[in-house]
Structure formats: structure tokens, C-alpha cells
Image (cartoon, rainbow, N blue to C red):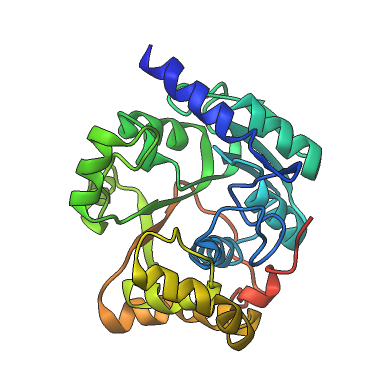
Length: 288
């Protein structure tokens, strides 16, 4: 029954519209679009990390598990000229991925993926496991269908935030992850790397740069809302790109992080001899 309630919630979420325009979870329309979720700079930071990790390899096939609208899969197809397909638990969002990007889609539960062992050269699963009860089973499914490379991103949320969500937030972040969470991979003799992302010290600069109005529930928020037109003029796309590109540098300097990009090389995959770091300008203008 709980799964049915959650699935209904997810399906409804992915049918939301504003002014008759589909309201996206991912920044499919571009930076600062009013028809997509906020915290777009943070989403771009995660996306840059994924793309930069993938750019280090030569590959021809990828599946994005729980891909939402298929934004990241579309970027990968565009930038790396590779074959991609996507899955999601929600038929509603699979329909969006087909309509918007022409992607091959399949409705699938991450806890029981309908694919053979080692079915895909590269598997991606971004910002999903934090929502999944029994995430370990989903992780094992991702590993099972991976032939060569598995890329997973998860948030590193405060434990208090996660505990609150477990009790009060339907579909929220209910699992806590830190770098040490994945130490079990060493026992399995799997080769992996971790890149830490989402430096907390950049949260306030991100909020100022995006300049999205807040609910007018306090004097501070009302003052901020009055300043958003000016903030948008001062801080343009170049500011956003600078923040995105500097994120991992700030993580290293500060020793603090809010996200994890995990890369597991299950079997060797050829390295890209022409690798160069991916920057925000390489993908932010790929919009619908």
C-alpha cells in the first residue's frame, strides 16, 4: 500500500504544469527557467561531475536508471555520441522523456531491474538511492546489470534532515550517505573512486546568483525578494558557470561536501585519449 501511495505521488509530480507548460524536475529549459525546479546551479554541479567522469572513458552504450525527464542521458548522447536509453519508476516521466528527447524508455523498479547480468557497458543512477527504502538492494541491481562502469550520485545530507524526512516527507531523502558508506566495495575487491561535490560554502552564493523569489514568510525573505531583479542583473549565467566549475575546488579547500559521485570500474573500460575537463559552458546551453 505504501508503494502505491508513493508511486501515485511520483506520477502526479511528473504531470505538473504551469501556464500549460510541463514543469520539469531537471533544468531542461535552461538556466533560471520558471518552468523547472529551483536549485538549478546545484543540479548543474552534479551534472558537470557526471559528465566529467564519463569524459575520461571511451564507451558506446549507456543506460540511465531513474532518469526522470532524461536530461542527463540526452546530454551524454549529445556530447559523447553514444547510444543511450533510460528507465524510471514513473510512466508519466517516461512519456516525457520520449516526447521531449525521443529516448528509448522503460518503466522499471530499481529494486528489480528487468535486464540481464552485465547488460550495459555503462550504467548511471543519479540522485535516486536517497529516496529508496532498502537502497542496498537497488545498488546491487545496478552493479548486476553493469558490464564495465557504474556511476552513482547521492547527496550527503545532514543526518537530522534525513531523520526528519523519514518521519514527515513522502518521497524525501530517507537515506544517509557519506564517503565511508561505500567502504563495503573494498571487501568486494571493486575498483572505485569518489568525487565530493556541492560545497556547502557555495550555498549562499548559489542562492544569490539564482535569485529565485522565496515564500514571503519573513521580513528577510521579503527583502530578498525585492532584490531579486537586481541580483539577476548583477549575477548572470557567467556567474553560475563559475560557481559550477569551482565547486569541487572549493570542496577540496574547505574539506566539506554535500554530494558524492561514485565511479565503479567493474571491468576495465578504455580511457579517452582526448579527455579534457568538462565545464559548465559545454552543456548549459543544450536545452529544449
